[in-house]
Figure 1 (tube, rainbow, N blue to C red):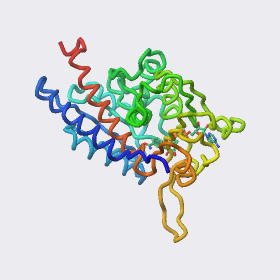
Figure 2: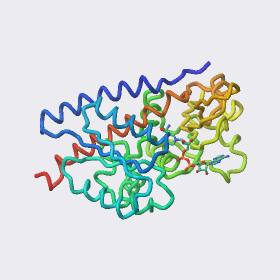
Figure 3: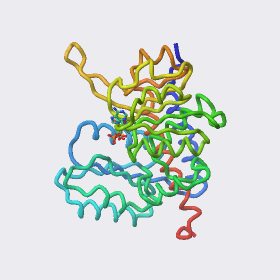
Figure 4: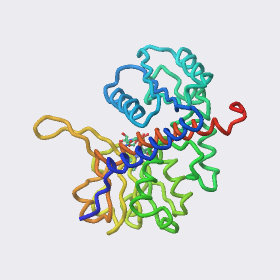
Length: 299
Ligand code: NAD
């Protein structure tokens, strides 16, 4: 049986560290990191995610305010809200919860957030910074929160220094998870393969991997016979499936019971990557607030 990686405990430890650094920043400079979490519409899953983000912000001493906008807000109206926060010195981080309703131009929205306040790490300036950095994990960058949280879990489980030369497979190639995850593993000197919906025989490619990251959105896609004995398996997927009694439960992209018997370490769903994503957002907000101390505007 594998070592089950406890994402809740890791996130709690990370948040305690962040809370200490937030308090230290406030004491040294009078700055309270400010985060604005913008949600458009009433999607229940998105609403529960943003409430959690705002609650955890409060727990670590960040001024994390929820900004709730009507489902019918126009792209221009949303851009006006973002521009206001770009100009507001009390706001260090701006997050727009995705997905947005189809009538809103997501690309324009993400490009309007000032790169230095882009705590989701989705602005092209931050994406370019991630892909061109020699050491993307040097603590100065705004990295996408889920891959950042995964790297922290991998570091705590294997030690980031031990990653050099390891074979890593990332399943999924989204801009939010798959691509930045691959860039971070490459930055840690892994040999990285990226698997996606058109990959022929993904199981065979996974079987060589020391580290497998699954970020697809397909329940139970990764089976026990995909995994090399002893490999570390990080399950990013969140899928709501029907239970035999007619209820719903959350599962990942990995068949947990089958893979746990083979892998050396595995994250559960829920309680694995999810809490680390929220902690990663807090880390980014702290990073953005700290950076204002060094920027020319603040001098
Ligand atoms: P996405 O839909 O944007 O991307 C899915 C990717 O999977 C695509 O790149 C596609 O090529 C690939 N894919 C589809 N079918 C495949 C197959 N059969 N074999 C291999 N690859 C296949 O999704 P996303 O935003 O990257 O999210 C992926 C999953 O992670 C979802 O379940 C999402 O809910 C979850 N997620 C979790 C967190 C968290 O904090 N835990 C954060 C973000 C996303």
